[in-house]
Image (tube, rainbow, N blue to C red; front, side, top):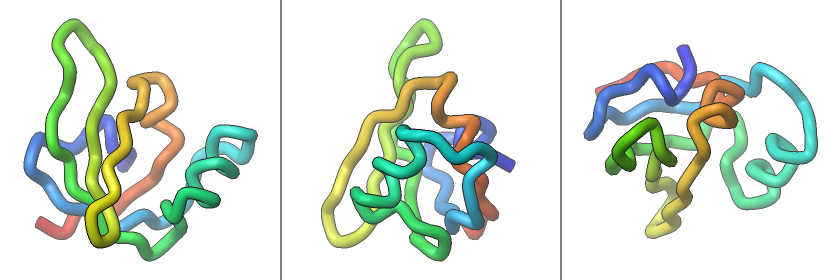
Length: 76
């Protein structure tokens, strides 16, 4: 499952990445590594970005086409 499939408010653990490219490498530099817990905060209208929170207080907006590269396991 990828983060694009999660409902708002869901929590998940990153299990890996579907592709390896500059985007996924940058996510890992920002602390989104396998084992990281994240939460879906909201989705922008009209298939806009997905906002997630992770770590102590980090927030990130991810474009819909890029969110499919983040593979997760839902935990709540």
